[in-house]
Length: 185
Image (cartoon, rainbow, N blue to C red; front, side, top):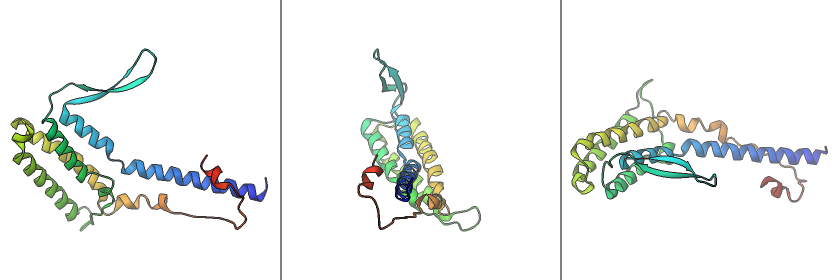
């Protein structure tokens, strides 16, 4: 193999490694599965997969419980949850004050809980939330918020990307024309 071919292979390998690293970061910051599970909880449903006569697998939603609120309430609660839990908020930082305590994290969680509790209470009638479901909705929301936002304590979530986001580039002045076409394969 010529030196130029080795260089081309190295460029392609680096590109593919960066592509994989990007996919890993994208996966770690994807909050959609958590939010979808919470929405299923609110709607009283679940997802199932069925196979049709042709062998195609399809995803269907099954209602196997009562919704915790009306459709408007579910959508509003989900929009609120989406504002709290999203890829951008996972990039935040809650500094540690002591070895095991982050006042910023604790205050953030407390503020979320108070705000959600207030919104749910004020809109209980409009959202048609049964009184016996109020605390369960709030507890379930906080059970989703606290663990994922704890990743931001002491900047650990962003630090976990440090190796992934390091970049090294080795390009020679004599690159073969058309190398970008190879990278996109």
